[in-house]
Length: 299
Image (cartoon, rainbow, N blue to C red; front, side, top):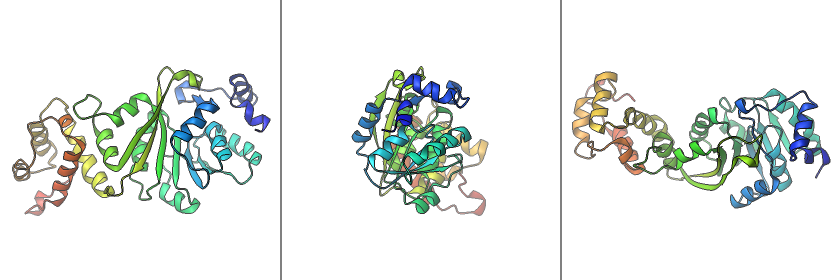
């Protein structure tokens, strides 16, 4: 390995590298770098990550995972919002010429479908900061280009919400929508000391592979929106919750709810419905044709 890159995987070397460029790491900005090479290599192997092709990396920082991907044989398209980190990546990129392209942009504004078409990327990987992890996940989920896999490092609290089972407190929008769209596997839970500086919380590395029969339009315009309504007040039964939506927000009409009651059990709470029932309800809403224009179901 190049000696300069090698310093990035050593705590003291990393600190000196950043200080020489006038930088300090900030916990507040989620700047906790995974620096253990054996652990990263193990994660990539367990996820059966490819050894050729192009991958989009979100938030590479100074490139700890980036260089592991390059060494594995991949070409990396790095999406990095922080100008300073992007400049460091550009400084280091000649070490592996032609293997790294840097996009100085916010992942929340990136057109991932266009980027995949332009670059030929088939996979996404990223260490997602807590404060933007969920919106980035949904941006990727609704991307019309279906990547072969989306591989993300998340704070354990977010990962627990994604993997939550019906009837539990963490079960909700993330669990329902993402598990409808993807087959999700937890590769590993990672303790704070594996990062530098070490965060106070654990992280998880998840791999999400798209389901071939998932309907993006249904998920984005029906499923997610009706789930939001259903979980507005978790302790209320769904009948009362949906009636409130009819009266207060004029989203559904009374005739629709009466009709739907013959198919769905609205005496349950939102967290008691499994993913399959929520998907069936979303389809039922999409397929229902209002009799009058003013009765349109507007989610």
